[in-house]
Amino acid sequence: MKVVELRNVYKIYRTEYYEVRALDGVSMDVEEGEFVVIMGPSGSGKSTLLNLIGCLDKPTEGEVLINGVETSSLNDNRLTELRRDTIGFIFQTYNLIPTLTALENVELPMIFKGVGRREREERAKELLKNVGLEKEMNRKPNEMSGGQQQRVAIARALANNPKILLCDEPTGNLDTKSGEQVMEIIRHQNEVLGVTVILVTHDPSLAKYGDRVIRLRDGKIESVENVS
Ligand code: ADP
Ligand code: ADP
Image (cartoon, rainbow, N blue to C red; front, side):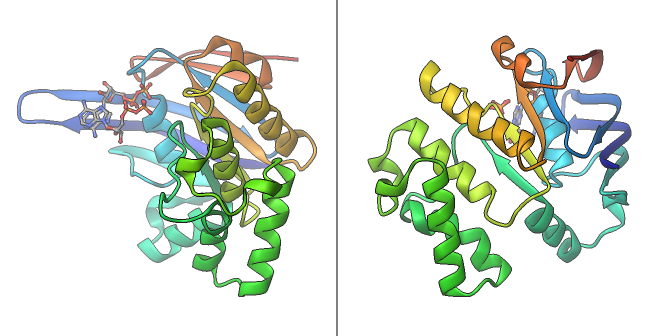
């Protein structure tokens, strides 16, 4: 089953003086359970592509389908629901709420979904334990290392059992060892739990995690390589 389909997608940013074709006619499919790595130099359109797949942004032209549903046909409420129930996001800069503890950060998506207090606290603790942060649960982001913060962000992304995990340079700010821990957690989600992973990076050393490596250049797909 295809969980993501892009059909001839364009994203054009227009300014007073010039326009940027961040995505210039991109078509691609992602099958359920796949691990896709999207590579390409800075400015090639990787973040734009991921934001469109995550319904954080809309294409200028073309179609984005998630689980077979054309997303431009959805109203804002349905889109929010789709994002909340189907998609988990991990960013280079973690994007945790600084005033909340690790536990509270992980509970947040479950609060938005209406999960009861006891159940969400239990699940948040379990998720944090699974990423090795049992002892750090009551710390705030600025009391944790980058690697720890990213693991909190992963736990948060997994809170509502997403089918698709979108990762934007998840190891970009981490040292090698912390980066490897983060990648092993992501790999586990994919291999053991069957979560579809789409990861964008300019780091060639992450290509090995993918079933498929798609290379972008100037907003176009330059090559697709199946790794087996
Ligand atoms: P990457 O993630 O590969 O670095 P991006 O998707 O961030 O690439 O950007 C692709 C191109 O689109 C770049 O030239 C970038 O400057 C431009 N761009 C991205 N977002 C905007 C925006 N909001 N307004 C104008 N240009 C943008
Ligand atoms: P990344 O490191 O993930 O590629 P960037 O640092 O390129 O992200 O961009 C961060 C934010 O700034 C994004 O929301 C992107 O859409 C926006 N952005 C990127 N390039 C431009 C630009 N030339 N003009 C306006 N906004 C931009």
